[in-house]
Image (cartoon, rainbow, N blue to C red; front, side, top):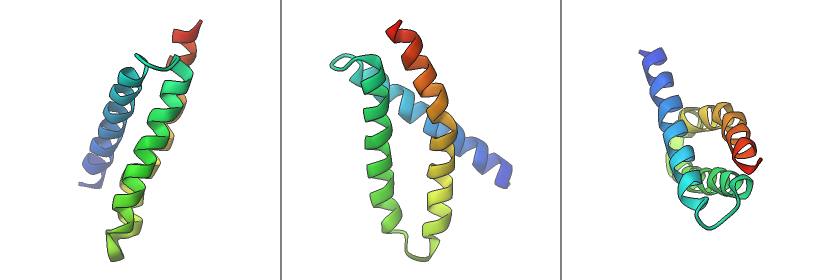
Length: 83
């Protein structure tokens, strides 16, 4: 079950970051849009993580680790779009 949840978290993070970066790309250059999407997502997810109480560690692992795994792909994609 943990593997399914991990895969869901990775897919969710990828979807959120790439869709948000794509929306921001209409007003910012690709690299700035990617970094802004990452920061906005971290702020929102971080704020909700603080409200989790005892489950804060699991909540952070559910979004923090996948975000860090998707970030290099997001930056690579932004770099390719910039060139």
